[in-house]
Length: 420
Image 1 (cartoon, helix red, strand yellow):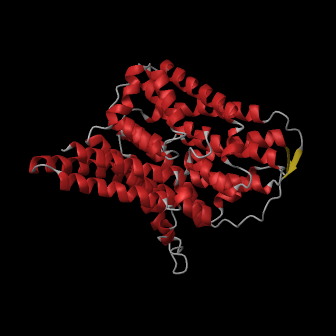
Image 2 (cartoon, helix red, strand yellow):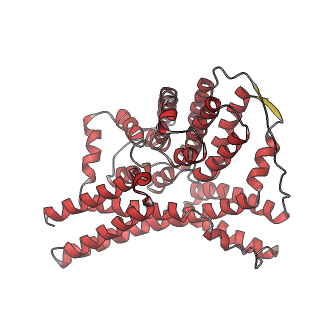
Image 3 (tube, rainbow, N blue to C red):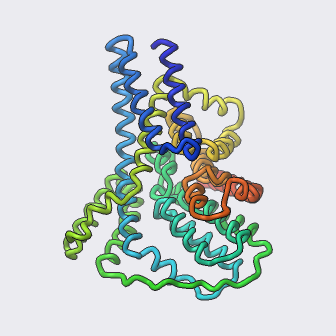
């Protein structure tokens, strides 16, 4: 392949990722930008192929890339459809307000908020977890400086909760599907990750002394079908873990089975009615997110094929893996963690289990360091007046301390369980 073609492909990737960074400035949806350049880049590879043998190599690489993307896409489609249904039916909102007390101190509520975000984001997507949590924070009607503390904890806790579950964070799912860590190793991440959330909550709670009255909205009545589907969602998560652990069943297969059962249960309860068909909830999910992942992974696959990603892994030759992984976590606050993780996986780095566990935590939580570094941060910023890049940066020192604590704790735990 001519050098000019390689530079053209690299330029296309750079333009695509700049489109992600400056989405708010150019007013073009990031999913549209990366999908366009991701598909176009592979077309250029086919057109510019010097001979049929090279074209066959491109075809094989694209087929492998599409297979990886399809597994991730279908898994996310199934999980997001479950959450869309349960959120629309009020099950999530009912759970929140049923466990919260009517009056509580701000300090205690901060810790409860961290706990809720951590647990909820481990079983739901980060966007849903953030939206629900931000709605709770706004309902408290506190002064701005206190609201910002709660928002900061929400972003960090949501990202921390998702990192230990393949259902909670895309990068964790990607690392798991690449056979770098086992389910048991991921579950162990939850301990250190939660301790880091508690540390940040303790740091942010300094000076909080007042009481808060929680105005609970009227709870929606829960029907039998909603409770059964909620239980099915939990059983599907447990089944995914056990199926992978005991029989090596791919997570996407278990979740597609759960999704099919959800459709059948709705039909059994006569819930699949004309004015609210169950299949409509497939259309209610964030297809923008799915298309974004599709475009990103197409671009990363192209960069892997032309050999560009070796430059990213050069850091691992220049410094110890422990520090290189930490740096990748910090970079994930500037570079979307999905392409960053995909690039590292495509590079086929040789690391111990402890080091892969550390990387999983770093790229999953590192985006919390900046408000623009994660989907949770961007959603929170769009919903909370006064939460900006600069106001969030005021807590950077506290966020960094909690992040480093969590990273070191995860790595240490990895060594204890046989990280070598």
